[in-house]
Image (cartoon, rainbow, N blue to C red):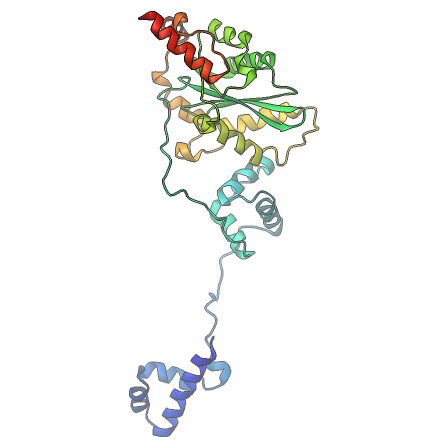
Length: 323
């Protein structure tokens, strides 16, 4: 309440005492009679101040101090919003709360909203039509001696994870076998960056053996592998921040996180659905393995070289040789 407002109300009362009429004083002050009558009844300095607008009765709060501490701890350590906090509470503590409840806790403790930096032009998003049409694969270094291999379906965001001590061609083949074992739908293409672990002859020969097309992206273009890059960022934010990297059963914990990500965690780009639900909805158009094998032409899938310039020259040479 400002001092100028209290002074104005004192002026109204002084005019009223001078003229002795509510109607005349109200006209002179340019206010309603009911307004002047209200302030006449409250003539002390304390009475001229605004009363509290807090409701007389408040609804019973649906959270306790323990939940408040958990919410504030997640917010302060991970710097995530209310929806991610709800997801983390359910994953780590099996606590189901609504986003509005988390928002009330954050407001109560005066936590400022997270700043969002928006690009001037929204990116053009793309997605393959059916599960297995294209799978993005990448390797992310978590810590010295811990490399996470990630494979994510371009269509449904269904992903497979595993960690190794090194990123080698042998580990790439082992991870490919894991992907084929766990992924429900036939994989038609594998898209990777130009890492050495993916350009080894033995890895590419394994892809040819499974009739999977190899599609490496241009160098220094991680945005072309954007879904797997963003997925790895989510792993770092929501799993590895609380994971014990020295745990010998780290891959078991990672498998639990993978199950939660695929079958329970809602995905904003999938309109709140889980990757498993999205894959099931679009699975009708997915071909069978025998159809994928029938469409695969080994003559069109030569061994690729890691150097982008050499790879492009060889591709152009093959085109000229055909003509």
